[in-house]
Image 1 (cartoon, rainbow, N blue to C red):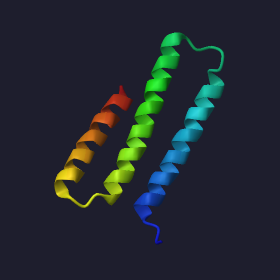
Image 2: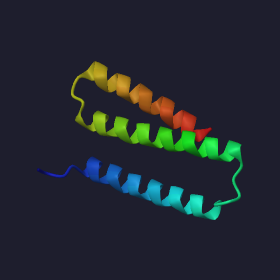
Image 3: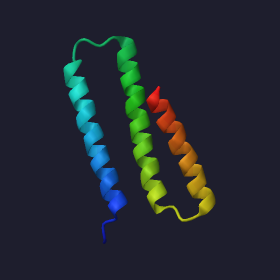
Length: 82
């Protein structure tokens, strides 16, 4: 199976995000409020959804399906930016 550059970039980005999330969790361990934990859980859910959609987008060939995935990705990115 050949490796696609986009797949490798996506995987590297996922690893970086996981490392950053782990570092943030270590830095804030024991000092988080209920709100912070809820926000962190929501962000992790969005990150996982984003990762799944990016994988689907890399394999999608139908233009309508790609458009739907791109919109979903934009929505997730907007939510993560908040």
